[in-house]
Each structure stands twice: as C-alpha cells, then as structure tokens.
Amino acid sequence: MKLGLALSGGGIRGAVHIGVLKALEENDIKIDIIGGTSSGSLVAALYALGYSPIHIYHLFQRYGKVISNIGTGTIINGVGGYLVNKKINIAGMNDGALLEQLYNELARNKNIHKMSDMKMPIVIPTTDITDGREYVFTNQVPEKGNHEKYITDVPVGTAVRASSSFPAIFCPYPFKNHIFLDGGTVDNIPVNEVRMKGADKVIAVNFEEIKINHNSNVMDIILRTIDIMGNKIIEEDLKKSDLILTIPTDNDIGFLDTNQIEKCYQYGYETTIQRIQDIKKIF
Image 1 (cartoon, helix red, strand yellow):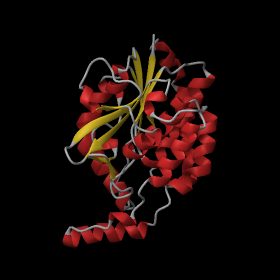
Image 2 (tube, rainbow, N blue to C red; image 1 turned 60 degrees about the vertical axis):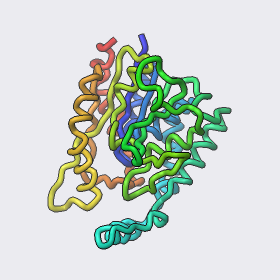
Image 3 (cartoon, rainbow, N blue to C red; image 1 turned 90 degrees about the vertical axis):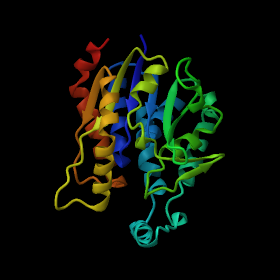
Image 4 (cartoon, one colour; image 1 turned 180 degrees about the horizontal axis):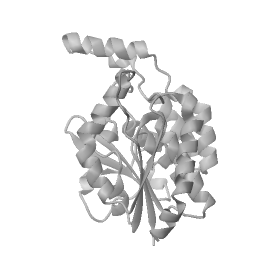
C-alpha cells in the first residue's frame, strides 16, 4: 500500500511540514508519494530530492531570510499605486529568482536537474493567471486526468518558484507562454493530485484558520480572504483525504517571519506525535 502526503501552503507556517515529516520518520512511517503547494512545495521538493527532515530544517534556518528578503514599504507602495491608477511596479517586489537558483543548486547536489529526473513521485500545483487554469509540475504524468496540465520538462527550481509566487509578495513568474502565480489560489492542498499519482491512502496537512481581530495586519486579512474564497475547494480536497492533520499555530506568526521557523517546526512535530496512533490506523 502506498501512502501519500499533501502539504498546504501558508507562508513561513510551511515549516510545520518539516516537523510532520520528522515525526513520521521517527515512527517508521514511509511516505511513498508527496505533493505540496506554495510553501508546502518547498518542503515537498526537498524531501522528494532525498533530503532528510532534519537537513530540510537546517536549510530553512540557513536560507529562510535570504529567500524572503523584501521590504514591506515596497509592498504598500505598490498596492497603493494600484488602488489609485491600476499601475503597480512588480519589479520592486521579490521576483523569486533566489529561490529558484537555490533549489536548482540543491537539486544538482543530488544529481537531479529536472522534475522528470526525480525518483520519488511528486506533484507541485501552480496557477496560470492568463487563462485561470491549474498546472501541475510532476516527474511523471498520471495515466488518468487532463494530460495537458502536467509539466515535467522543467528544473526543480522553476516548479517551486512558480508554485510559491504569492500575490503581493512575489512577482508573477513568466515562463514560456505562461504567467504563473501561487498554486494555492486553486489547489492549496493537492490531495487529489497525490492520489492520482497512485497513493492508496493520503494524509492532508493544513493549518488552523487565521483569526481576524483588531490587531490583525494587512497580510492577515489577505490570507484570511484567500482562505474564505478557497474554502469550498479546500473542503472538497480534504474530504478526499484519509486523515487530516490540522496544525495549530500562533496567530501572531507573520507570513514571512523567519524567526518563527523553529516554533512552526515544533508545532508540526508535536501535533503529529499526538496523532501518531490515528495515522497508523489508516493502514
């Protein structure tokens, strides 16, 4: 029986997935197929490349601030310009190039250059804002489904960058005839795609909803708005899973607050340990 893991996006909260993987590893639970969207793709790609959970944790700690380095003033000025005259200087935002370069280098360290070279089955969703369609980066096109939406002949860094291009933080990613945006806009928990890759059982990992109050900032409101708009899709995806790991996190963890990586990791690890018997039962 093949076990699949579907990892949701959520900014720096994606570090909880590392803790989940570590807890599963310690309990000899083998993941056969993995999928991740946005920040979930960062963890999924590294795991599928062959990096251990503890190595992934150290990579997040080492490179997190470099990848997410962007001034909030740039975001506010850009959004303000759009509200006034519908013009925005996307060149001032983080273009994601450092992220792409880093992942291509980490892939080369494992003698992997393209998604099609990866041995472990993996899916990474993204969205093309020109046609509003979902596309999925993978190492092998599944037998069923719409084959046109699957992309295999690209570097690993391209897939991760495309899936992680979160609106207002990272620039949309022009690639060939596409303009890719964060995969979470259409498929934030790729349960169905993981199952289509051959998983008999699928564990979905998501986060508790962000609570909005008088202390909430603009990014909290944006994230909550996206959650609300995507709730129907997320609910349907979660219904297709065999077990849902909902990880509680502090409401004050900023979207790109890399100082909270360890805390997020611990949340993922501890929640998974608490649910380990439930996880074993799905077998």
